[in-house]
Length: 280
Length: 139
Image (cartoon, rainbow over all chains, first blue to last red; front, top):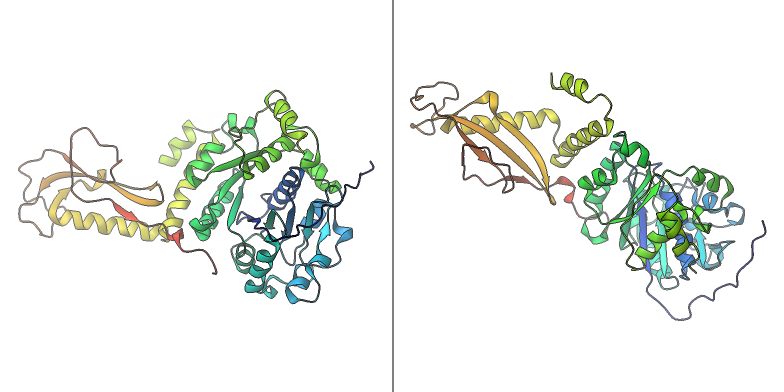
């Protein structure tokens, strides 16, 4: 499949004040990176300029999920150290030129990140992009602190599991009210919920009590898209792509219907897909 | 025992089990207390009540419940008799058991479900601020 290179979007001339959103969860493996990549694409598809920062220093993954690993030459720590300019370190996405990535370092450690410099960097990037989305590492130690320091909003990703809910609860407590955290329930399996074998979105949020931003089903195609490095939000149809686009619309302030995941991906989501799949 | 009935009646509904485990684990998380400490606190709480009134220790229920952003301790303490000496020691002495009517006292938050025959005790809800309400990391 041949990708059409869109016209590069000129970087904004005058300073703007973009939104800095951290994607976090506490627990590892719940889908933070996948969420970051897909929301990045979904927001960029709306015509916004989006910068993704992989703050998982030492365990670089976001570039893989985005399929940009071969383009990464420099990383976050190079920029923080001042050895490489920000504009030289960012990697432009191959599908959408208004999406860029600042990759994490694979060889260095989280402790090497200077919290104040990280804050200043996010501050600077907000002047150039509509959205700066920070992919937070698992855990609540230094890496977490550095990932959230520059953000002023948080999206927490939670799977319907006891351990994930507990960790999100902890992270939300650590974040405090300042970040106004919103919830994405990830990897929901409605058929299991119906049989009483999985916590429902309502069960999860009866405990967390957060504004619900969206629900993503446990979609096998996510594995395929990650294998290929082409996030599912790039697809023009399908329930999961539609769900990510609906979340992006909600982030952007649109009034989107309450999120649901149906057992059959047709019907409602077919229509949702038609609504959002072709969104520019 | 409870465990036995739970297994007997709800062998397949694991989401129910998950909910219950979550509730318990978050309760201890928010109190920042080990389960043994919570048990100790409950015993101490009952001892204090028992200094003033004779209570039915076997029927006391003390639970914790999330209410908005705060955690509330809800106690349902059946009172067997009022100890007129006041401030006395006995918890089980039973000196003044002339009026053995069961009076249930509820030391609970406003939303506590009220039992049928009860009198509301003045005690305000023992509300413990969740430990995780700490300020955001870093500055």
